[in-house]
Image 1 (cartoon, rainbow, N blue to C red):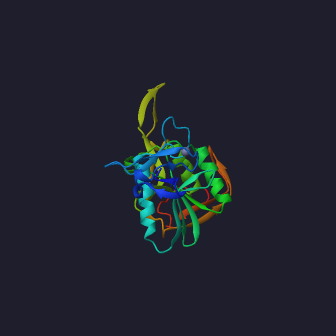
Image 2 (cartoon, rainbow, N blue to C red):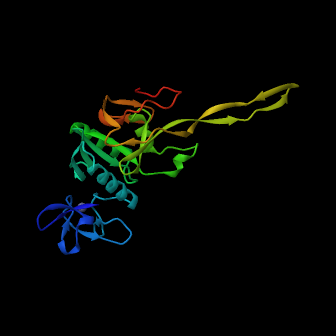
Image 3 (tube, helix red, strand yellow):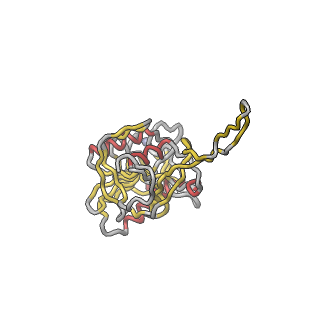
Length: 263
Ligand SMILES: [Zn+2]
């Protein structure tokens, strides 16, 4: 966690702006005392003491902390941003970043491995009830640069929810946006003799069920490339999307081919 409550005055403070002499620092969820970690290399943060029973900060990696901090710092300099807050607690969940962007309340959630698709759905529904648009994004992933990629469960969910787009934080307030196109597998042709006649098979392409081809679009800026999109509940295959308010980029579709549900 990048923030904590300073017990002396109940102020929410940033780890990088805090000193150990200001301790104790408390977790706003479980009220236990947190350790302030100010190392030379790692991003300054707060941590629970073991055994950790609190969900706050669970599954956060160094890269996750970096993403939150960079987004926060980048938005601080934008004129159309107000009410900017790191790790804003909404009870059911803590938004990594909350801000009003041109007046629109937006929660940014960076995906971490501890979160299941069910968690994502619950949080998405909760933000919708609060009238907040949500942007789900992954961390940078070099595998997306290949032509053959097997999307993870949360990526499939986001792809369906965001009309064929999945966001990945890149740096500052820049997000990469990926469409997963079909991946063709070539079935080699073969021929053989059967009952004195020549038979043949294969020699065609088929669409893989497992693999997709990542198709990157133009990178998006959080402060200016998105708008809210309210969508009705939808389900298909193994994916269920609740009624939700999404923060969706408005770049025209950059891929062709199969129609994506909802567009
Ligand atoms: Zn806690």
